[in-house]
Amino acid sequence: MTFDAIDKKLLKLLQTDSKQTNKALAHHLGLSVTAVYERIKKLENNGVISSYVALVDKKNVDKDFVAFCNIKLVQHTQEYVVKFEREVAKLNEVLECYHISGDYDYLIKVLVEDMEAFREFMVKKLTKIDHIGSTYSMFMINEVKHTTAIEV
Amino acid sequence: MTFDAIDKKLLKLLQTDSKQTNKALAHHLGLSVTAVYERIKKLENNGVISSYVALVDKKNVDKDFVAFCNIKLVQHTQEYVVKFEREVAKLNEVLECYHISGDYDYLIKVLVEDMEAFREFMVKKLTKIDHIGSTYSMFMINEVKHTTAIEV
DNA sequence: TATGAAAACACCCACAC
DNA sequence: GTGTGGGTGTTTTCATA
Image 1 (cartoon, each protein chain N blue to C red):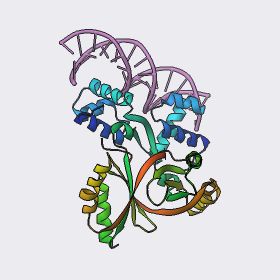
Image 2: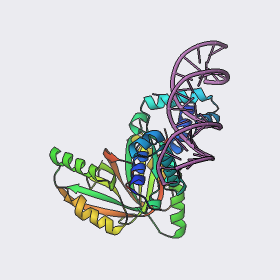
Image 3: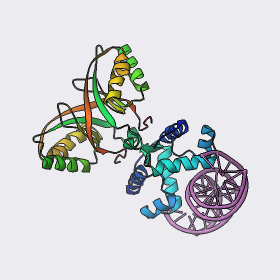
Image 4: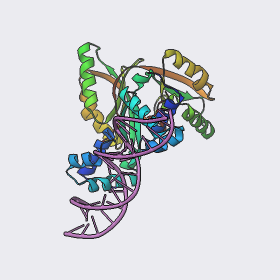
């Protein structure tokens, strides 16, 4: 589908705050409530908007220790890859996992309470997955930017 | 604040789908609508729930080229650091930016249309920021997992 | 705290322009 | 694309236990 300037602005607004009423959105966009309603439905039906979620502030739940782990597998057979991906996706400390180019095979983002919890995670969960060769971890010192909103 | 089992389940539900009605949530949790309403308000007022947003599927907007760039600054004076962080945060291709431990100073996540757009980004935006020493980029081959929901 | 009832509000969809 | 209208459902408040 194609987006005009209004669609883009609408997506920006909804990606910032999805609890705005259609009336408020209509006012921002200079459209009628009905027009806004139909544009939103179109974006939902086309899968552009995949879901609406609540975002939790990790600082306010005492879980703001973030680590990025580069992971290398010992082998890259279909079987190993599939199994690793399935196992790692199950771990709820793992917020993101990407198969990437470069020196390592995967990059994962891990969220836990503190360094001690991270150690537990590495020893008891991550490295329990078979076929992991080596890992290289980086710890977050400060979160400079983090947004879920993408420019369309 | 402290969370009981119901709060945790409620947060999980809202982080998955914030458009559920309080009635549906009440049914899932075995509570009354008002009880759910007040728990949600408490979570919002305590800053546990920071916002409600629409999530856009990057595949459906033809913007699914993801790169991770490790960045090293030439110097680490307060002035350079502050300036870099301010400039990089302004770039809307940069979804996330973390000051990290390890061989590099920063890890950023970049979202653009394709490799050509990434090249443009690197040449015309990122490396235009002063004091960047070296960079090391990794490209996403596949997104194995990506969630905004954190376990509380 | 939890609840039910009631008012205020927003959404949804059809119709007319 | 805008506007209206009305039925439906939801949010919010409040009295009550």
